[in-house]
Image 1 (cartoon, rainbow over the protein chains, first blue to last red):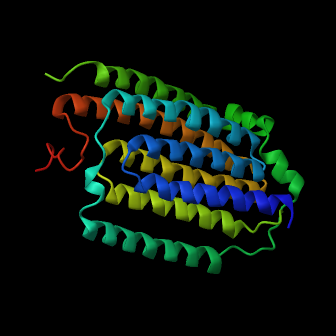
Image 2 (image 1 turned 180 degrees about the vertical axis):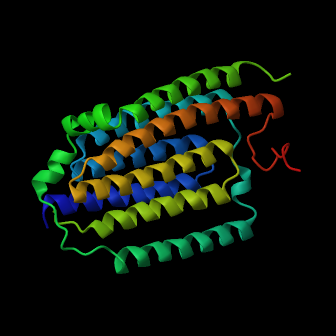
Length: 170
Length: 102
């Protein structure tokens, strides 16, 4: 058992457990904190997959920026505890049954229709694919127009958020 | 490539996605529904990075970068909508927000 397997088991178990805890807590702040834990474990998994740039971006953008935004809104609105979590057990049962059914289908597809294992790539090409150099070259040459479009999307989102949250509708 | 088979990462990604779907279905707090959507986006990102790494091709990680951009824009707009909703109706329960229902 080498270090990679130990780290994979550790990160994946914590990520799965924190996702389940996140959707079952009544208090939104506890849910948000477990979502941060889930994002941190995902960053660890990205490092195991040799994706250094994506791992750092995951920590900065998701665990940093987006979750701070969520916690600020929870703090501003101070929502009451979600009391509907306990009742309506029929909907919960149906949702869990449908989810388990779809999950079984996905696992079946993943294990029985997986592509042939002969397409092995070398470790070196996998390490090279995750470097900032490779990703930056791809973004600023081949995908420069989507990159500019993403910039306009963020500008529109910033202006739209200001307009929406400014004051009451007439 | 590595000692871990690709299927394990994909099963973890599928599990997180299904957890997000169940969360959207059973929760009624608008903020938690939003967090479940972020969880689903992250599980899709995990699949993309897994395939990208096992193929030795960096295009999948470029796509993850754009998914993160869209997720940030979506979070900003969605939380602004939630604030406007709370100001007008004083609730975050999405069952009580049925003003567009015909």
